[in-house]
Image 1 (cartoon, rainbow, N blue to C red):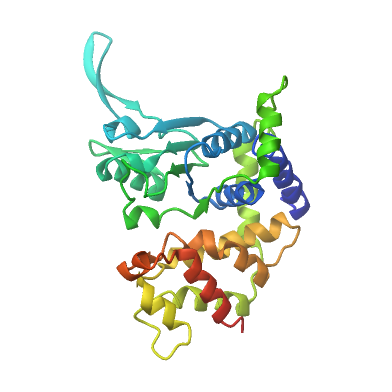
Image 2 (cartoon, rainbow, N blue to C red):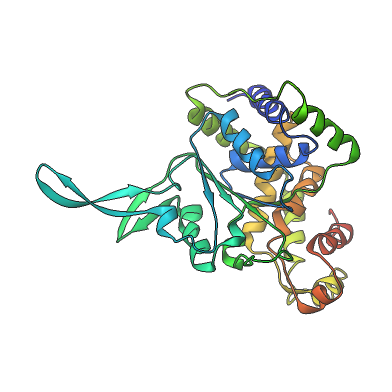
Length: 328
């Protein structure tokens, strides 16, 4: 695939989803970048901000199979991955595998932090291995495959924090904020008038093949060694135990228990490559890196008690790191 074709397709996908989602252009762009890069996304925000509508619209625009899983405290792992059922065939009874809703191209895990940790962990293998195992048998998932999980902020009642191991498997964590007065007025005009906006399919029947071509092109984007070194320094600077004598160590040592895993650096580089292509370039800039640092790392750095007591969040610490880590 040519870069021009990538940019044209990407912008068509963006503009189509923007027909029904107001004021979240940055979120839409980063969700699309994550999908093309083969990652999963965690969307966080209070109820009613359009997180679920965004995911539904994305699957419709892509023209790919879509399943929604509403996470509740009584949801069981077998409700997600599927189970063996006793069926009769040619006069014989035998167990057959009945697929769960995880078998789709785009899976919406709605309010994932309302389910118990046991159920949350059921999506771990699916997200990482692109397969599920039931009674010792492995079943491959659809390709491309993406989990888009929504969660309410932890302060709300009846929620279970996601385990660190599962958080690390999300490519990006995106924060969905409330609309501005202008955006709210636009939402009201679109949703309370006589005509309601709807999205159209952008990708043709060979959508999976097109996404495969876009993914291949994304990985071919050039990244200069100095920019790669900058990403390494940024991720390394999040490690509280490895920063002796480093000027960036102060907020890290003071507020972090654990820094980012290597997956954080992978997400930054792939996200920066996707952003470069979306802007019509075939090389990564420092600005591309800094645009994806926050969604790639905010869920991978673990805050300590002091940070929570002083109301310091991950984005504030990352802002300090971006300010203090030199580009060269």
